Length: 314
Length: 236
Image (cartoon, rainbow over all chains, first blue to last red; front, top):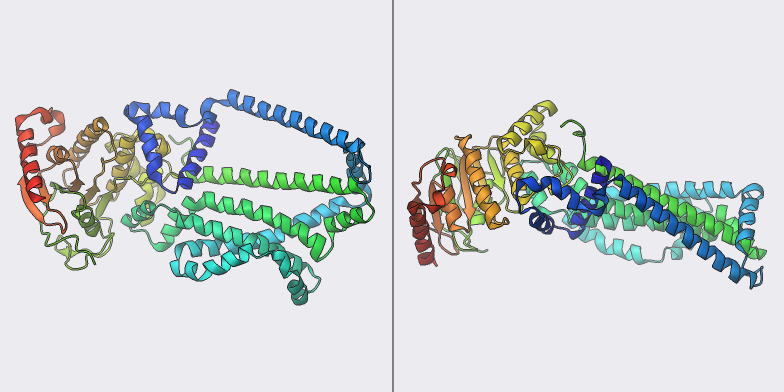
């Protein structure tokens, strides 16, 4: 029960922040709670559908699994029917994609290519997280910094990064640095802009409460602004990761041909649609797992903020 | 520059409950924010025990209408917040916070997240948080304005009950509601419209421990209400 309760709260926490104001939330809360003190226990029930207990949660998971299996079967069957009625060179069947995957892993070092994708992602995305979050926090808090940087950030955000490839090659040559910086330009700006947005949308009341408690600017930052913008920070990371992933494949395909880029271009050259599709499926699965991992981290973190230290003490 | 307040002078005694009533926009909330140190007066000064106010300090508590509990902290962590800012050691601040939660009657909800509490309960947690630093003056800006009529009356009597165990504290309370002011206060200050001026000072002599009797149905209570209403109307 405890665990379900938690996921319910995390949900309401995020909704609240998205609304950007606690007042509406309180209003809802009050209509539920008008009956008085004794209702606190009942509200747990009302809080969210997820608060109903482990049985219904298991049912939810089972439901999802069934939906997934059925939809996957439908897609595979449709794919198969289309493929056998098409030239196999243009469009491969599911089973030939499976054997191509096996071939790529055993004979063409797809595993190595995946490692190079993840490594490039780690460096480029990691660098943008480490630099983007602090800059976003400062931009959101210090008005003048925001006013100075905002137009440039927005311009860079919409600039097609591919157009920078020639310049990057002149500057850094065909080195790993070039690819890392290329990926960096993808995830840096969305992270900054989203984090800054989160800081700006911190409820003024939350900051005034801290001022009443005579908080230092540093305490306001660490104890109010950061926890309050945590959902935004994670949203920024999710978007950043998705675009960094695009950047990685683009870098390997167009900038310095390595890893999956080599394999994809090889597939194109020799009309191996089965190999190309195999790589796409593998990339899609990796991307899915990465974004799920981030969601998992977010749940962990936002729970930590809400339920620190006291678990089991009372 | 907008003049919101004009020559406002009054005293609050130790342990006294003073309410300010006045039409919307008469600057009563601004006055409270200036006293708290959240805002600076363009001219003039606020003296507490003879010393001028500069900025916020933990000897002045503030209760906001919109409560302002942190949703990422549970109830007791919210109460501990000011002590944490001051650097009070963990054990100590937990002990104080629990004591204050007991005072407002919510010790059982220490580990609850505030979003699970009713509006009235949330405001009591905010009161516990404000009391944690033992402020000599508690400023309350329409704290029960968002509650429905019934929870509001309960919140008022609960507040008096909390304060009855806590005689040293002075309260400055801003409200729209005439009967709320009469019910709670030892003294009522009626404000005129902007720029806010003191129109009238009314001493409310309804005795102590009002929460123990059905004071709202007493004749004296309605008499005070009409008196305040009369001054408010003439202030318009």
